[in-house]
Length: 150
Length: 449
Image 1 (tube, helix red, strand yellow):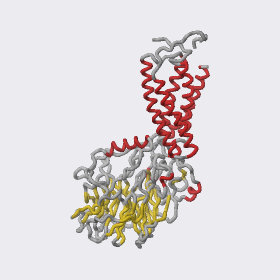
Image 2 (image 1 turned 90 degrees about the vertical axis):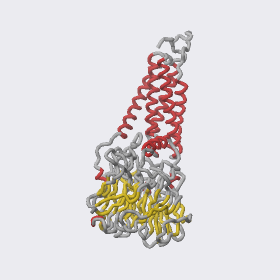
Image 3 (image 1 turned 45 degrees about the horizontal axis):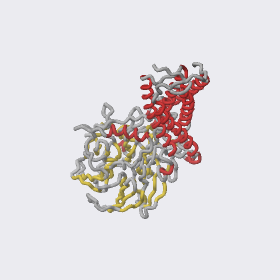
Image 4 (image 1 turned 45 degrees about the vertical axis):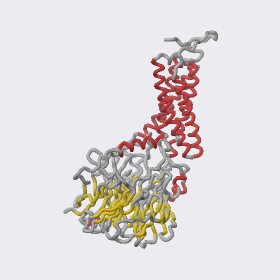
């Protein structure tokens, strides 16, 4: 990482478009974790139904975000420095893949649609999103990252 | 900073990959399995597997072409008795020989509760919208066929009862005719020779119908002395995924007092009981039951069983006795401890929906005293299972030997459905009748020659 001496004025040049969409997907995935926990604690099917809708909606939004991210990449709006951009991108991709898996686990009937694998996957995805969320401060449009207009 | 995050990310990915692998293994294990090992009193039960999405393998509907018919076992011949019906699901033979064909469609009131409902509905619509064998007109009625000379060609055909609500079971006691709609046992007055009933009928007993109404077919049989009716009430879900409240009084056989309409649960824990019949030697009540889905291609075997008063057969908490189903919460070890295994497995996902004991004597002697079972056929296993009528030999009131194929080739060589058998009955001449709800035909099996 380039040394940040606290004085350099960093311009955010050409921020990417996908984070807005991806954050909507993220809300769905956080919601899935919450309703999964509610089902785990109550065994009330309606919570599992909420989870199934949330994780599916999240996947749909996530796929759209992925397409937009590819466009970002192609038009030079997905830029950043070295390790953080890679960790950000791969982390989010992993979160999306796990969520696809999670949506499928949530098609099961009854208890095992959530406990244990649905719950584990939901929690894992939220953890990854916390990490990539922090990383996003170093990617593309945030301070502390030098972005060159290529 | 970024170094620490990278390590964290890596660790998280490693955990995630392990999970994915574990899930994958649980979902893709489909080795060769001998389905014959699941026919008889002690079926092999593999470990349950859970899918990432249930395999949906439905047969495209092509219907019967001119001159086509199912294949029958040696010594038998088969002919269509009536075609261009609208989803004939069961058959009841009146004392004067008139044949009632119950044409019925599901109530279609199951709500979309999850994205899965949307996806499965879409996949199902792909196959059912294909060219069926005609007869897509009015359903939910009973058609009367009169074949007075017993040659298999009805002289008259009339609409006996119309505007019913997803009817299935029929029982006649004297002049009292009962029709089990999906939401009520209806009573009508019948006089011999009548070819049409216009009376709206009265409700004897209401049955669990909507909302949802997942398993909607209500099988019906009257006790030998005529004082009681037995009615099969299937569950409202595969495995309680619609909530426990939706299962109230379901997955059971009810005993209904014909005089008052009062009922009590006769036997419980039967996921979807149909084909209620009396075993001729012992007079015991028997049923065929559709067991639960999505635990693997070879779980859980559907079965036939004698039904004892007050007995619990496991659904939803367990199958085949004490095999606990992990999908049901809260679990009930107290009920699982009481669950008894059924008498005779018919193989997994064959979907038996009709049964009749053979007490006539026109078919070859080996069929006497045994049971014919109509297997509607599987949807959630890679290889089709069922789609045929089998015969289970009986002796001393219990099954005695392997089920054998009697009527087959409802699927053509390309795995397309020309028809699917449902209800079975025996007509006055001793011929076996089969309701084919996809081929919209009633088939009649007689001795060859």
